[in-house]
Length: 455
Ligand SMILES: [Zn+2]
Image 1 (cartoon, protein in one colour):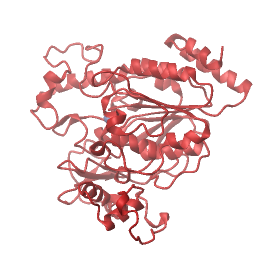
Image 2 (image 1 turned 120 degrees about the vertical axis):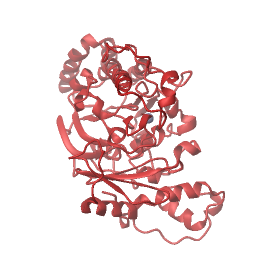
Image 3 (image 1 turned 90 degrees about the horizontal axis):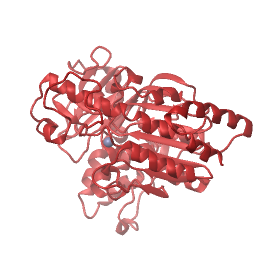
Image 4 (image 1 turned 90 degrees about the vertical axis):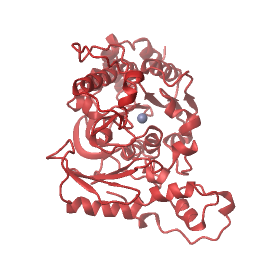
């Protein structure tokens, strides 16, 4: 029986911990193998709801993983497809573009799967929700297996892990498995409705039928009912523990494990049960845990973004980081400020940038003045403060670098025949431009380092 089939046989929760120790011991005796990569995205899981981040939802399997917990990790775009494109390209959403509208990204830069393919990695994606179907997201680029065979809008994390585990057990060489759980996404219908709020007697059960009138910026909800709905969401997060445990039983200490989320969920600011239309902390703050040789276990308080994961994984594998990557290897200096945008096609669309102290948010169209929040004094972002010079400078730098691209991408996609000046700019950013324009004379592009990276 191979080492991995032994792991499959022992993958029940009872034996998971014992197996970690066993496999770690085996690895130290038999020598190294190319690191496998297990990358789990728990869709719509806000960090602050997890016990690992001081919240309620416990995930003991993740606690026991022994990874490095990045306490201040952020998404750059609170929507599923685009956020996952950011994960697997390391590029800012302003660069890789308008994925949901076009069914695929026209970004020409490589994905992690494409970078791993020539290095002998098997690449499998196991999808839990319809927003990552290849037909609508194009995320299948670089994966040899894109497992999305389910009816309706989603399947359970248990089913996803079962499919992923079966695929992992078939591999004889190095593998990269992307596992996508959709359970925490709206509506909030956990198996156990009473886990965190057994005394509730109201009518809200987390289904779309009861929540729909209150969703987005709809009818306000009574605080007690909102409290219960949030408890259902927390329960959905906690119920991811067993599916995670099943996967963690298939990696050892030489492998690379990433657990994160594409965005959080809003339960405040008059915006309920969604994420696409807000840039508050509860929507942008995501979990990020990485376990890999060369990354010390513990807690890391530095600012990190989803753009940072790809260059980190590439660094661990000694693969050069391609052009267009906006993040940094987490083993080096961190980014000083992180930007986020909402869908530039939807009104009102928003920009935001934050550093370790504060956040500034402003509307994209029409262009408006930023509103500043002191996140240390006011983590709930309830009381705007006067402009903060350091963050204002970071904002200007961001706008000069990539901030205008949201306009550019939106305007270009609306044109059947892309103007040459627009095509030039898009091409510089890694976009594939219409073939008819390929023969047009172009000015030579500036050097890649000529544009300051957002901080
Ligand atoms: Zn999502």
